[in-house]
Length: 186
Image 1 (tube, rainbow, N blue to C red):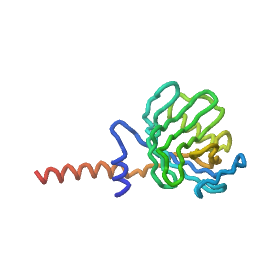
Image 2 (image 1 turned 120 degrees about the vertical axis):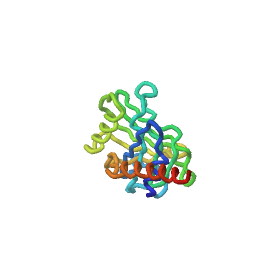
Image 3 (image 1 turned 45 degrees about the vertical axis):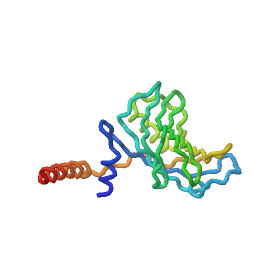
Image 4 (image 1 turned 120 degrees about the horizontal axis):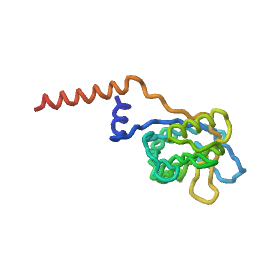
């Protein structure tokens, strides 16, 4: 029931929200002296859920303003500028965050180098997923406030989270029950 409430609260008219889950393993790529928070320490498994409006149109060039919010380790982090970019040589999912208070994380970027520009947002996401699955050409970067305070991670999986088949039916049933209850009050 809680999941249905959350889904109904986060969906907007005309938007088709879809969750894509990224799993990655943090590494100390450049031998940095920056000490990251425990969730991003070398060897840690980082889980990010991107809530993406898969109906988002192109904002400009090949930029889709599609990332609506980000969940990092189950904690909701509102993005004030989330986009999917596909340009020659680089595909990326960028989320500029409203500074997380406990760890000063302010930017997350899942980058896929090489490849070609895909004509749709859906194909762009599938291209990133295929690149992650092959283990080539992708990297996750977490930027924390301060000079050179970045953590890198190797993506291990990136895939859409399936919506249970009964969820749309349950949602429409709840709407009908609400209408019936409203009529009874009148």
